[in-house]
Image (cartoon, rainbow, N blue to C red; front, side, top):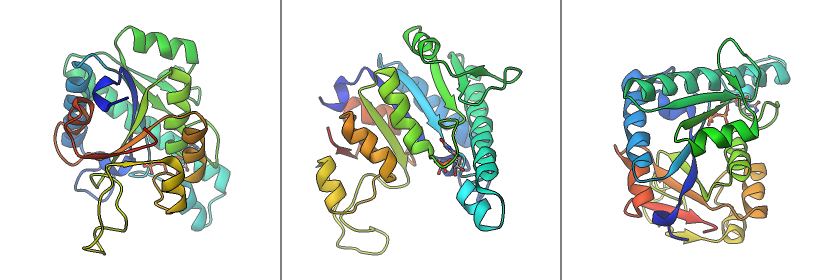
Amino acid sequence: MAAADYRRVIVKLSGEALSGSEPFGIDQATADRFAADLIAAQALGVTLGVVVGGGNLLRGATAASHGADRTIADVMGMLATVMNALALESAIERRGAKARTVSALAMPQVCETYERRAARRHLDEGRIVLFAGGTGNPFFTTDTTAVLRAAEMGADAVLKATNVDGVYSADPKKDPAATRYERLGFDEALDKRLGVMDLTAFSLARDHAIPIIVFSIREPGAVESVLRGTGRATIVGG
Ligand code: UDP
C-alpha cells in the first residue's frame, strides 16, 4: 500500500518536536504549525490520530537516573504528554477543526478517558484524536503507544515524526557517507540495528504488520506531503 492510499494513520510526535527551537517546554508557534499541518493532512480525506510524547517536559528514565522512583517518574512523564496533547488540541480547535484529547490516565475534569470504541467513533466522525497519557503504564514509551493505538484504531500506518527525513545507514550528522533508505523490511531494520523505534514498539509493529513511516517534521506541511506520497521518508515494513 502506498502512502497516498492510507485512509487512517497515527502520527507520533515527540515532545521534543513541540519545544521548537527552545530546549524545553511548549513552543506555541510550533504547536500552531503542527495544527495547520494536521488539518491540511485531514483535508486529504485521511482520519488522524496523534500520539504525543513528553520528552520536552519530562522523561521517566532521565528523572529516575537523578534519583526519582522510576514508576512515579514515568507517571510524571505520562502527565507531561497530557499537557502537550492539550496544547495541540487547543491549537487545532483555534483553527476551526475538531479535536479531542483522550487520556489513558483518567482525569475526567481535564479530558476524556481513553476508551477504544469511543476513540474510533471520534475518528469516524472526523475529529483529530490526541492520544495522551501514553499506554497508561510505566516502563513503556509513546512510540509503543503509537503502534498500540494504530492496531486498536485499525490504522494503515504509524507516521513517526523525527528531526531527520528518514532512516539512514549511519548517523548522517556524523557520517557524510550515510545513505537514506526509501524502504526497509522489519527484519532488515532489526538486523542492521537501525533503531527505528524501541524494541517493544518495533516488535508490536512487526507482529501486526503496521508500517512505520519515518519523516522529518521540520518542514512545514510534512505530514500532508508524506500522505500525498511526495515527501521524503523511509517506509519500514510497508
Ligand atoms: N511514559 C510511560 N508509559 C507510556 C508512555 C510514556 O511511562 O506508555 C512516560 C515515560 O516516562 C516517558 C515519558 O512518559 O519517558 C514521555 O514519553 P516519551 O519518552 O515516549 O516521549 P518522547 O520521547 O516521544 O517525547
